[in-house]
Structures are given as structure tokens and as C-alpha cells.
Image (cartoon, rainbow, N blue to C red):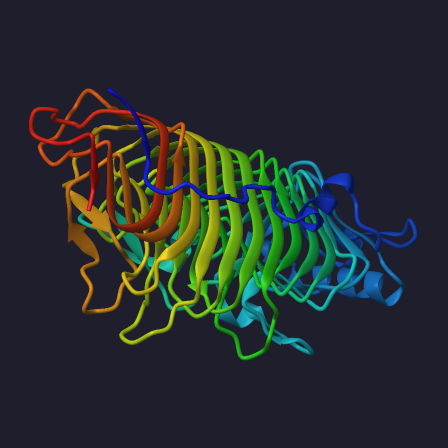
Length: 476
């Protein structure tokens, strides 16, 4: 059945994000690497047999390069270097040559450095300018040595208290990370906090799919960032933009462009949130593939920051249910905004555009705000989505997590292809709703709208899951 329906028509601004967010596309290398000096870590005492602790030797090479105005710190191929925290500095290129492996120490004492204090990552930087990570080598986080017991029900390991990040880079400017890989991260992978002018190109991530919190890339309070050509497999969020709660003011997240990436996750593949304490704006995700995840394009707005001018376009998705402790219940798109805590304040969420998204999922394409604070100015254009079932987990639920105690985390609810609740000024244009081979009893409408003001539906195609019992389009 084909539907042509217009409730309210209006002029809708659907332009690209601000041009500043794409300036990095014209640059492949940032300035900052000075001279041609190279500092081979083995010349500073590093052994590289995978057993000897090489942290002090590698740090000496880094310090020497920085003291001499910058240069390349070389970890030569054919070796494995065991180390704790390392602190990178301005003008240094940290080069992992060929098949070299940098192995994370499991000793917490190795992350407290004389002269630098306690560090929360394997590779750290604070205020560095012109820092570069290059080569084809690999970082091994040894995640299985940072966990305790495994739950068959939850399908996940329980982590120890101490878990280092793979990268912890704070207030770094003109930063470039290219072509290296990391895996088996025990906690967050690439955490960028308050960084500006960042290029991440060709990063490959292979984390365990049953270790929690092992995010892939986390730009947090960052500006002018481009992430491209990355291939990420991890249990938690693959690429996630944040404005986390901090004692210092690290500024907003703004002008961030993610493109041509392939991700696999048990949580969200492409995400903004859950930590949204500061403003986030001018964000574009495009030409990405979500191979499999609990949620596809996601905005999980739970705190006081304002989020606006966000676009997801040209995205291929496949999303499915997982064990209940993993957030995400198979939503191909999940845009939600409500407090995480009782009486918590949530900022505005507006000017959200979803274009040319195609795939399948085990749950609805969701837009869901608060009744007294709706999501504003939403465009759903050329979304072609098939809802089906293929996993063993119970369906007929909306995953609202994270939620305050009074709110149902897994809400019992029928499954329409498109679900829009508590929103205003919404355009649904050229979208298609489909059902797969397994039409469950709780599958419902092609499109269901509840408390939506200013809804325009144009050139929509789809039928109810059970046409004799339900309407194709239900507007309450």
C-alpha cells in the first residue's frame, strides 16, 4: 500500500553541516614533526622480546626526541615491546613499524610514571601539539588479563577495577593517527578529550565481543575532527561522540565528520552520547556500514547539553538483540532524549537528519523524546528498513536505557517499522517499511506516531505487519 499524507507542511532546512567540519578533508598530515631525526627505541635500551619491560627505555626515546625539538620515535618491526603507560609530547611521531606489537602491562604500578604521575592510558598525551601515530604495527591490550568471571546469561566478562585505556589524549592539537591497529582493549580504545584539529585515518580495531566498555573511538569535547576509513570490531560503542562530565572545561564537541567506516558492535555502531553534559553540534556521519550491532545510528541524550545540526546519511545497517545487559535491542536507528536520573535536566535535541539509510533490524526505527520536551526538527528521508527476527532473545520491547529508576528500561511495546513519539516538526519523506520472513505477533504498524506535532508524511510505502488487524499508519 502506498500512502500520500501531509499533516503539516513547512520549510525545512536540510543543508549540510557547517563547512568548517570538513576542512580536514583537504589535509592528510598536520604540521608539527620537526626535522628528520629518528630515535630507535632499541638504542635506548628496549629489548623487544615481549617479556622484558621496555617502558623506561621507550619513554627515554620519547623524551629525547621532544627535548631536541621533535622527531620520529621508532619501534622497529619483528619485535614485541612490553610497556606500561607512555607519555607522548609535542612534535613527536610515534612510529610502529611493520609487524611490531606494543603489549600493555597488566601491572597497575606501570601506569604511574616518575615525573608524570598516574596515567589512565597505555599511550597518553596532555597538551601536545603536532603529535602523530603512524606505521602498520599493533597495540595489544591483553583484555583477558583484566577480567574475572564470565556470565553465560549476560554473555560478558566482569572487569577488574583497574583497566587502562589504549589511548588517553587530552587537549592535543594538530593530532594525526593513521593506519596502526589495536585490539583486546580492556577499556576504552582511542579516547580524545578536549582535542582540536584531529585526523584519524585507517585505524583498525579488533576487540573481544564479550568484554564491556571496550569502545573503539571516543571523541569527547573535541572540535574539528575527521574520522575516516576505519574498521572497528568491539563489544561496546564503535564510534561515539561525547561531552562527558569533567572538572575542567574542555569545551563543546563541534565540527566532527565520520565517513567511510565499517563497524561491528554489541552496543551502538555510530553514536552520540550517552554522556551529553556539554553542547554537541555540526556532526556528520556518512557512507558507513554497520555490519552488526545492538543499535545503528544513535543519539542517546541524557544530560543538560544542547545537541543540534546532526546528520546520518548513506548508512547501511543490520541490528539485532543481544543478552539483556548489553544496551540496544536491535534498533536500526535510535534517537532518544530524557533524563538519566530522577529530576535530571536534559538539553534540547533538534535539527536531526537521517537520509539514505537502508538495512534490517529486529526492532523499530525510533525517534523518542519527552512529552513536555519533544525532539524538534527531524527529517527521515529515503529510509528503507526491513524488520525481521533471527535471534533467540525476547522481542516486543523498546530499549530506553540508560534510564532513571522510575522509568522502564526495557519497555514492553509493539514493534512498528517506524516509531515516532514526543517530537515536533517531523518530515517523513520517501521512506519504505518492510517486513521480513518472520512476522511476530507483536509486529505492528508500518509507521506509528504518538504525540507528534507538525508531522508531514510524503511518499511513504509500507503495510502493517498484520493488515487485517492493524492500520499501516497509526497517528495518535
